[in-house]
Amino acid sequence: MLLKTLAVVAAASLVAAPAPTLTIARLQYDGGGDWYANPSSLPNLLQAIAERTTLKVAREEARVTPLDDRLFDYPFIHATGHGTIRFSDAEAARIRAYLIGGGFLHVDDNYGLDASFREAVKKIFPDRELVDVPRSHPIYHIVYEMPDGIPKIHEHDGKPARGLGIFVGDRLVLYYSYESDLGNGWEDPATYNDPPALHEAALRMGVNLFVYAVTSRPDPGAARTASR
Image (tube, rainbow, N blue to C red; front, side, top):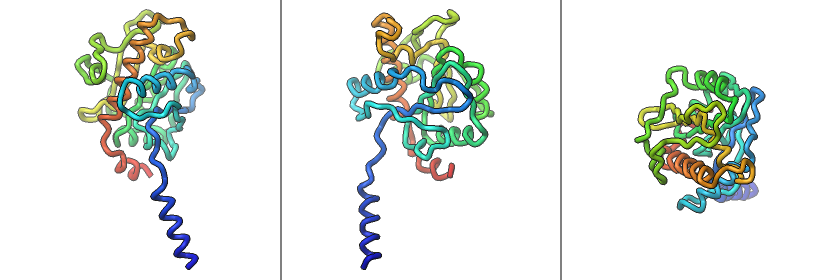
């Protein structure tokens, strides 16, 4: 009788377990870079997604490491920082499985991340190159029309903002915002005193990125099983 009762309780707990909340997960990585940069950026972007789309999202970000069991729960992973980003072989393989299985990674160069990220991405996809995402891609049109592509938020080197990506088949799985400082544009307006038009352009690009990630995502279950 006791065993039967325990079985019923265990089954009930499985049924009652809530599904993971739809949100953005910030990637905590090794290497010494400030993965925690731009603290108000993701809450502000999540608020914009909640107010401007029909997606039911949390108002707080999640945080994961590449080897976290929860990695596959999140359709959108965000990484940023000014310093060095580094992945072990196991971490690179896990991120690759996550992306191939339906995940989406947005990496925002917060000025200083570029050189180490380009090395890190070669470990994830040694067989693929970062390419410019064409302005005809849905990432620039899915909710808001962004005919000029990714907006330029801060100047730094004065180079044009570029949206680079890696594709698996026709699906964009990794988007790298370079020379844009997109995450700075998501921050509280008083942080950098950017013009309202720049803050709005950054949020619109972020909404497009998240909606594309969610709506282009196949069932990640197979990749989750294969990665264990």
